[in-house]
Image: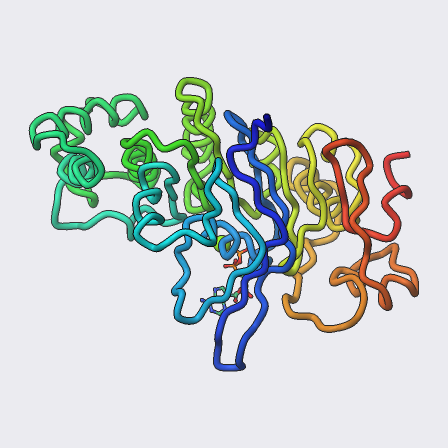
Length: 324
Ligand SMILES: Nc1ncnc2c1ncn2[C@@H]1O[C@H](COP(=O)(O)OP(=O)(O)O)[C@@H](O)[C@H]1O
Ligand SMILES: [Mg+2]
């Protein structure tokens, strides 16, 4: 018996654009274990959201081609009917977006909207759904719940709205929560509170969380395991403690160096983060042009996926070089 609640294998996502079919993510492999917080980290544009939205099949399927598999328990999400997918969305797998401002309707109170969300998935009468909404607001630290529930979105700060959004997302007791840059728009104090909340939901409800961020600092703060993405690929994956102390992909090394740089801004050795170009076409490694260790082979041959321990792998020709 495996304890993975979500198992993504060989995921390719292609989309029809003005320039024809474009491959946005390639061969993505991710395991999310039950009760774990798994980070997906990488620069803007590397394919984190495309990957995460695929888990909920949120892309417009008239223009999208998926291949590979996304297993949620016994279900292969990529092959079930849209009607069955609709039943999973919100009730089994929930998604929190970056900007809570756009997720709430300005014309209704927060309590009404959370209650509506609850009623969309359960048969609770209005009054009870509203009472549950108040309770949920209390549980995410938006207090006093009764008063806050009666307020409109514009009366909330960004951090409160994001926590209310998370309350709404978990109102139907999903098994998996996808938090996509859920703290990016917040100031540092609010960011810390929302991260604390995610941890609490994992600890108290056993929720499994995919935490998407461009910031390795967030990963180091709350994630157990992590997938590092670069230009639509998985560059490296493993436990956060192992990767943090012994990154085997040069891109991961850069990401980690940059948080250390942010923590200690007097360090002049740190370079700015590299900007990946997705869709770079050559036979070798997508990172080769940015990589300070690159050799000829890196430009010619696709890097192999190498395991450096049971659950730590990197796609690089020279994984043995670092951390030795
Ligand atoms: N609907 C779309 N149509 C065409 N290209 C898209 C679409 N959504 C995302 N992309 C492209 O796919 C790549 C990955 O995007 P995304 O997953 O949103 O990145 P991020 O890692 O910042 O979340 C980017 O190059 C982006 O421009
Ligand atoms: Mg994104």
